[in-house]
Image (cartoon, rainbow, N blue to C red; front, top):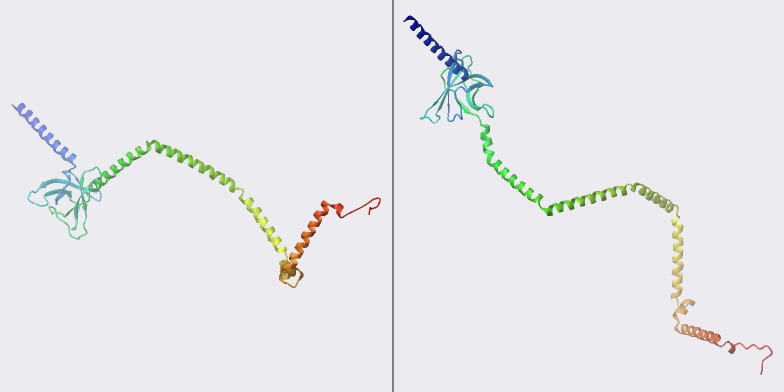
Length: 293
């Protein structure tokens, strides 16, 4: 019988040890250190956004505690009551706020402790003021409709581009534009080659201009103008004599009878010369042996 009792005792001890190991193991996996002393604080939220038991409580990124319990109060406007265990050596001044925040883009939730600056401190079992940080994903969600519109517009633009690039006429136009650009490039090259000789041409033009300036500078302008004036005066005197009826030229030009007589004389002279050429024997009679009477 004693042997049977010993066996039962061993089984009982083994069961107790297994339960203890399970208890400590589960708490270890949850991050709960049952041997460390901690203070208990409470925080209330309208929405915990996925906060679960054992989520960390941090101060500036340093873990000082964790979420121990979450209770839902159906009769309150802010129904979630969160119990937090924070290390006993951490003092929370008045003005401290428990901020519900994200632990990175793909992480879970955390309670970020924003320490106050008061001279008094909260005691264990006190309810601490809370706040909720702006969620990065909520900002992205606001822009999702706009992103969808942009994607649809991009799809439409891509379709239009594919339609244009598959158009035979457009391809011909592009080929024509390429040919035109080649011609323009060729013309630019020729223009550059032509302008390469411009400095030499301009140098020659400058030389010619310099020579002209020298020649013009050597001219005696006063003497030239004097001769021009003398010539103009002579022309003026000649014109005056033509217009003067008392002069020979003026009389010749202004006396109609004299003009008619001179014209008649000239005509008679012309007739005489014509008749002389036609009948020279009438006016010249030469006899070798003498003339007959």
